[in-house]
Structure formats: structure tokens, C-alpha cells
Image (cartoon, rainbow, N blue to C red; front, side, top):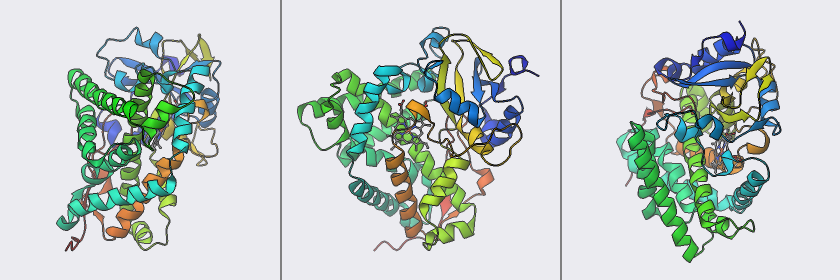
Length: 398
Ligand code: HEM
């Protein structure tokens, strides 16, 4: 059946969360592009084929990142707006303006001293492990993988440790929001945090990302800097936390694998690479809109229809000879083309260092429940554990 006649497949709900790969295999059966629902009443197209994904991500003539034509037809409380609704930042901008905003981010990220970043991750990891190490059990999502990137980025943006509970609670509010009103209030609290930060850094600069954004030769306005900082934090914290927790959950599901990491014979980096391919934290994203009506891989697509890339489905097809897949080379966990993640290097460094430290401190870590019973968050975009309960021999902390 041609994809445009098929019933759209939901990318939400408990069944999808528990086993998204069964859904991806079904979607691949439609061909390179399949009809999906991002939420009830929110249809979109999903690209599940490697070559189709690359050709879309690299073609700025046909495709735009600007969602406003689509958004005009959506209700204000559409639940996916916090993830794909327009904001004046690098992610939703095309062409020269995109290049200008992106340069501020890439040039500033390039100024991070990676040696200092590694020491900072170790310091934060030790601090977090010390808080739960004596008890012999933990939920690594709430006690380790969630707070770690927030505490590290707090420092990278030039804030003291005393500020991180503030940032963390604003972020947690966004993640735990149960309805559109809570989400708006939490988003406003997060924005207010970043506003305070930029006001502070506008008065006194330091060796930090916020100051480098402000001083970049692209000369962004204070409002533009605020928007890019909000985006950078939003783009950094959750996927990095999910990369670490997905990696630890995969490692712990195989005792031999984890022991070879804990005793140093497996590098944390190779575990992270495997997770980027098997369980990419940004599972379905890279949202684009056709600039005019197009036929893309036999699918007729209009400008007000979001087209997402399934990084997870595309990766699952790599080299495995999956039916209906064009195969390909490197995984697409970081996307590709002009909007690909500009922070691969620091993100991998943070995740690798965190996993290394956790496994060397808690060599006997075990999942408290089998991996197939771990709870996953039910949305379409991120592959994110709700909890990661573990047990281990309590550390003697005298
Ligand atoms: C150090 C942490 C991170 C930072 C600062 C960061 C920052 C960003 C930024 C600013 C963008 C927008 C780029 C643009 O539009 O030109 C982006 C895109 C992206 N990032 Fe990251 N990121 C981080 C970690 C991660 C992680 C861990 C993943 C998952 C493996 C990831 C996956 C992606 C993907 C797939 C995109 C493309 C999104 C799209 O096309 O819509 N990022 N990132």
C-alpha cells in the first residue's frame, strides 16, 4: 500500500515506549517514508531509510527547519510544541542566519578546555556517587545521569554549584510537567534562570560559554544570546543524560560486558559508540518542512507537514541487511548536514568519563530489575529511561 493511504502509526504510548523497534520494523515496511502520529491528532512523516535520511538532511534547497507554516494550523496547546514549535534559535533557522548563529555556538564550544572538562566531570561524578554510595542502591536517572550534565553545564556556563539546584528544579519542572500550563510555567522558570545568567555575565565576564557567546564577533543581541543559551542547555542536558543512562543500562544487561569495563579491558568509549547506534538518545527528530509541495521517495509531501528523521530506525538498518533498508555507513545519532549536533566531542567526553568513573567506583553494580522491565518515557522524540534502579555493595565512606 502506498504510504499516503496507510493509517498513521502512533509514536507514543506505553507499547511504543516498551518496544519501539517493533514499530520501526513495521514502519520500514512502508518504504523509506512512513506516516506517523507524534501525538493524538498530530500527523507527520517519518524517514526510516539511511540514504533517504542523508539526502533530506543535506538538501537545504528543498527543505527548511522553520515550522511556522505547520504551526499556524495547530492549537496552542499542541503537546509537541515544546519540542518542535518555533523559537528564534539556531535549530529553527535556515541559510545565512543559521550559519551566523551556529558559528557562535561552535566557536564557543571549541574554546572549552577538554582536560578541564574531564576533571569537572570526575569531580561531579565523585560528588554524586558519594551521596548514594553508602546505601547500596540508587536510581541512577535521578541520582546520577540526570544531575551530572546539569552540574557540569552549570560550570561551563559560568555558574557556581550553588546555582545548580535552581537550574535542575526548573528543568525537572519542564520534564515532569503533566499538562500544557505546568509546561509553560516550567519553561518560563527555566527562561528566567537563563535571563539572570545573561544579565550577570553582561556585567562581569568570565572564562565561560555565556561570556563567549556575548563576546562573539557575530555580535548577537542580548535577547539572541539568551535564546541560544536556552537552546544549548535544552539540547545538551537531556540527550547527554539519556546517553549515559542508556549506555549504563545496556552495559548492565550483560554482566561480562560490564565486568570487562570495570576491570579496564573494554574502553567506555566503545560502549558509548555501541549505544549511539543501538539506542540513540534522540530517537526521532531532525524535523524539516518542504519549501513547496514535493514528491520525496514516492511520497507526496506538503509544506505544512512535518518530516522527521528516525535516527533510531535508520541506525537499526545499518549494515544489518534489514528488509527495506538502503544500509549505509556511520550511525546518524548526531544527525548529519548543516544542523548536525555541534557538540559531539564534549558530549562523548562527558558521557565516557561519567561511565568510566561509575564503573570504576561501583564495579559490582547490577540492575535491580531486568532490562526489559525498565520504564521508558512515552514520547516520540527521546529514548529516555524514567528510572534506572541499581544495586551494589555499599561503599565504605569513612
Ligand atoms: C554537550 C552536549 C550537547 C550540546 C551542547 C548539544 C548542542 C546541540 C545544538 C546547539 C544543536 C542544534 C544545531 C543546529 O541546529 O545547527 C544540536 C543538534 C543535535 N544534537 Fe546535540 N548537543 C549535545 C548533546 C547531544 C547528544 C548527547 C546527542 C545524542 C546523541 C545529540 C544529538 C543531536 C541531534 C540528533 C541534533 C540534530 C537535531 C535536529 O536536526 O533537529 N546532542 N545539538
